[in-house]
Image (tube, rainbow, N blue to C red; front, side, top):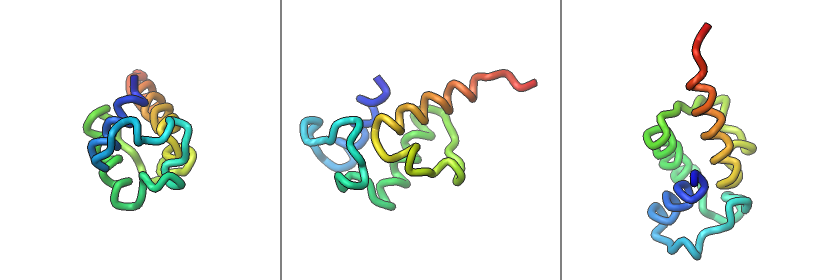
Length: 86
C-alpha cells in the first residue's frame, strides 16, 4: 500500500520504528516529521520511486499535509501520467 511505503520512507529517514510514526491522517508538520530539508528528501523519493515529477505549483499543503494526502497526490499524478496525449 502506498501509505505504508511513504511511512517506511519516513521511518528510514528519521531512524524511527514504524510504531513511532504518526497515523496516515496526522499532520506531518505538526508532528515535526517534515521540515524544509526533509521535504526535499521526500520529493526526491516520490519522484524516483513513483516516476512522477512534482512542479512548484503542486507544492501545496493539501498535497503534503498528511501521509494520506501524499498518497492521494501520488496516485493522481501516476493516473494522469498514464493518460494518452491527444
